[in-house]
Length: 239
Ligand code: ATP
Image (cartoon, rainbow, N blue to C red; front, side, top):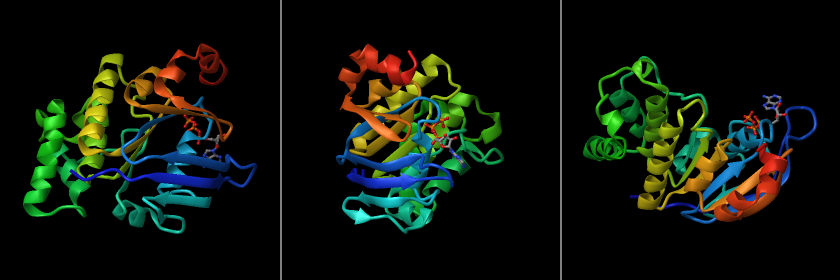
């Protein structure tokens, strides 16, 4: 349901007082595109995602389907259907799986539409359906990450940004998560910006990859091209 939005970032500049972490960054995503945002520790991936949703002050322009987001607060950006799944598996530990999902749908849907959006997430993530009444703190790392993703999906974002969803997960769990993300993006035509240090996992989902180094984009190419470029991987991605 819902369709993806195009994203156009121009001249994005973010600093934390010292030298800029992002310095005039330009990046464009077409509607429905899945793009992997790659780069070593400290490259600026998290900063880019946080600037996108308005969690850090930034200069420059961020347009979603042509609408300027600069100056809008995070919740106003959320109403424009921009969602961030932060790193650290941010689910509410005291609430059940079901309550966490309903929370994600709170401002977006009511009544039957909310039930339908939650049911759709259970269809995508069978492990979650089996743990509806478990509290967030009872879940495994993989289940928590699925829940964090599911909670973003119930709001049917036009642009979904994810910060290292694979962090700390076993390879099989990562593979499943990436598969679900790919299915959800395809089904919904959702635009996805996926920040990852797990290059192989991210490039298995993304059509295109962008490599960030010291706040600049040093490569932007089809996923298959990047996956095959061992010199680039060694130079910027550490293997
Ligand atoms: P990681 O995978 O470690 O999160 P990253 O690519 O997401 O890496 P960022 O977290 O965006 O990188 O960090 C980019 C740079 O900005 C780093 O040099 C970091 O030390 C600095 N930085 C990040 N957050 C802050 C902050 N709140 N205050 C000061 N400097 C910061």
